[in-house]
Amino acid sequence: MSSSTQDLIPHLDLGSTFGALFIGVITAAVLFGFTNLQAFVYFQTHGDTGRTFYKLVVIWLWILDALHQALIVHCVYYYLVINYANIGALTEVVWSFKLQIIIDVFVVYGVHSLYAYRIWIVTKGRSRALPITVGILMILGLGVGITLMWAIYQCHVITDLIKIEWSTYMTLGTITFFDVIIASSLCYILATSRTGFSSTDSLITKLMCYTINTGCLTSICSMTVMITCAVMPKNFIFLSIEFLLAKLYVNSFLALMNAPHYLQPNADTINSSEFRMRYSTYRPELHFIVSQDEELQASRKNMIKHPDDEMVHLPVQRSTEVMNPFSSV
Image (cartoon, rainbow, N blue to C red; front, side, top):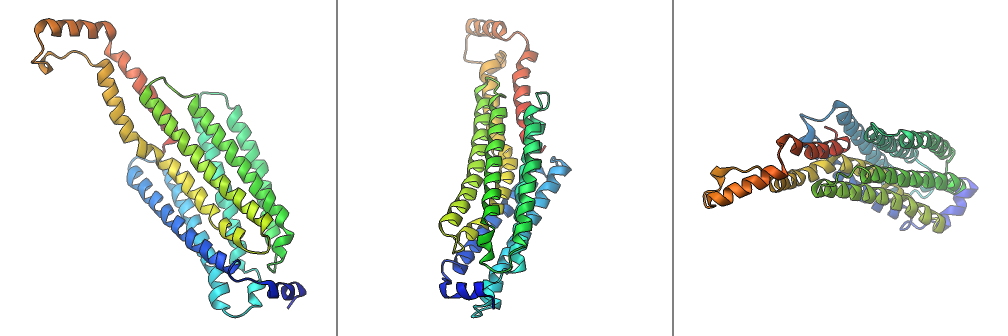
C-alpha cells in the first residue's frame, strides 16, 4: 500500500465520498430515463419524416448515454459491493471511472459539434462568419478535452485526482464558455429571424427560451462541479455532480430537437385562426343572418384589403422556413 493511500484511509468519510457517488448514480439513472423518453418521442414524431442523419444522431447519443450509465454503475458497484470492507481498494481509481470521463468528453464535444452544425444550417443564405468562428473555437477546445483524457489516465489512486485539478478547471471552464457562445449565437440568429407576425414571433421567443434554459442548465452544472471541487477537494461531491453532466447535455440537445414538435401544433392553430381573421375572403353561404347590404359592404372591404389571395400565403410560408432549420424534418 502506497504512502498516499495510507494517508488517505484515516480521513476517508464514506458518506461524503462513495455515498455521494451512490447518490450521483441514482440521479444519473433518473436523467437516463428522461433520455429514453426524449428518444422515444423523437422517433414517434419523426419516424416517417425525419432525416436519417438525425435519427442516427439520436441513436448515437442514446448509446453513449447508456454506456456512460453502465460505467458509473460499475464504478460504484466495484467500490461498494465487490470491494465491500476492503478499505485499500477504495483508494484505487477503477478503470470504469477513467473510461466514463472519456465518454463525457465524447458526449460534450459531440453535442457542441451538433449545435455548431445547426448554426451552420440556420445561417444558410447569410454571413458565414458566425458559424466559422464557432467551428474554429470547437476545434481549439478539442485539445482541452484530449488533455483531460491524458491526465485522467495518469491517476492510479484517488489522491492523484487532486494533482490534475488544473485539467478539471480548464475543461469545465472551456465547455462553459462554449455553452455561452452557442446559446448566444442561436438566440441571435432566432432574434434576427422575426417576421412581424405575432404567432411566428411567439414561436421564436419560445425557442429562444428553450435554448437559453438548456444552455444555462449545463453551464450551471459545470460551474457547480468547479466550485465544489475547489471548496471540497477531499470528497467526491464534485464527482457525483460530474456524473450528471453527460446526461444533461444529451437531454438538452434532444429537447431542442423535439421542441418544434411541442410548439408546432399550437402554432398551426394560431396561424390558421390568425389567417382566417386577417385574410378571409367573403363567402355568402356562410352568412345567412347578415343582410345583403351588410354582406356586400363586408365583401367590398375584404376585397379592398386583400385583393389577391396569393399574397396571403407569403407570410405563412416564411414562418415555416424559419422553423425548419430547428427541426429535423
